[in-house]
Length: 503
Ligand code: F6P
Image 1 (cartoon, rainbow, N blue to C red):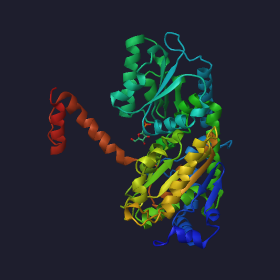
Image 2 (image 1 turned 120 degrees about the horizontal axis):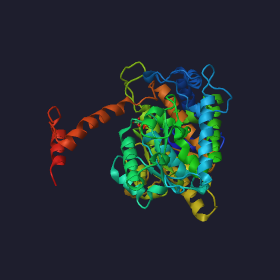
Image 3 (image 1 turned 90 degrees about the horizontal axis):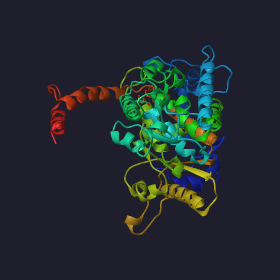
Image 4 (image 1 turned 45 degrees about the horizontal axis):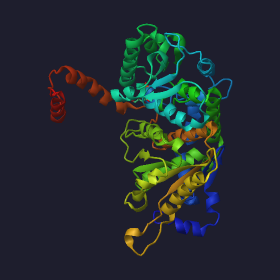
């Protein structure tokens, strides 16, 4: 298949487009423009069976501690489960429903205009302070559900320890009418705690007292939140069996419910729940997350692809590539397998992307005529509100890019020729509804799960991020208060000296 051409594959099979597409609820996946045939998909599915994918799926949905290095279950699916009790033998649903009920009460209070600051004025602005999984998901969804915006406080997102981030968010805001959500599963993350402290100082300088009325927390560490002075009734729980990058379905999604309403948030959960059912029940060859995962493994482990581009043809999905970067790269960016052995094969590719059509005027030149092998995911929405020529043009461009990558364009002048035979998936959403968004995110979550099983890595820990944080913790006092730099490498020592140079 390495030499197979998409032009020939289509010429040889008039029904190819139909045969290589899958429908699951709100989503349609067209994967016919991939360098595969039925035999390829059969062999890839056999690989998944060989790696016991069905058993791993069952283990996740039964709450087994498959996050082995942290001895934790992986139960983000429970956050959107409709079962009265789930999973068997370890029912977490009472806690999940309890937390959601509290979210709903808080959202109702805010939407009634009853959320008041220390001086009794109604809150007009809510700032979510969080990073990684406590930021990327809600930020992406608040934007994606823009059209469902409910009247109520404006929402802002702050994640970076760079003071410019909080400064820019607070510009023009009034302390008395500003409320902060501190989102952190661990409540130990330096950036989030630093921004929360700065927010508190900003409030204190204007209000003096009653600051706790301006805070809520979303966390699995309620003691940490209360230590920051967040009143217990404003601490919304999450649990260690929810990974940060899988947590938008939990209280971490509170900004989404505040923006689009609790009903829309529930629809998001329903969309994900439908994808969970599809993932659990559909045979592997017709299983959308599994097929996407197998295509990625085909290119990464057989074609040597090192990256995949995600190009949503939707401004409202502008933040999706960044969200998927954490989901996919923090999950499967691993070099040691579940048995602790170094792997001798490639694992997660670099995921990158930006929205179409601006991407066409940026990096598509390389996609069409560059020397790298880069599979692409196009995400297209059939109807996004008004049906306009522009909306149609957006979709036309997405389809055109997929066709140009696949079939190329011969030209007598070589610098104009497009070689083609470059694979892409097209994910078609009927509308950008909360249900479709829920299904879309759950699709990628399960794709990542399948890849982790076949690459035999633990997709649910992220030990690789700790050392850099620890190093930063040791460098900070040296930067602030001078102090010895012995033991540091020459480059860090030199840069430190430059940074410490007085103005
Ligand atoms: O450093 C990585 C990470 O732990 C992510 O996995 C997580 O989403 C993010 O930091 C934020 O963590 P927390 O929600 O605990 O503040």
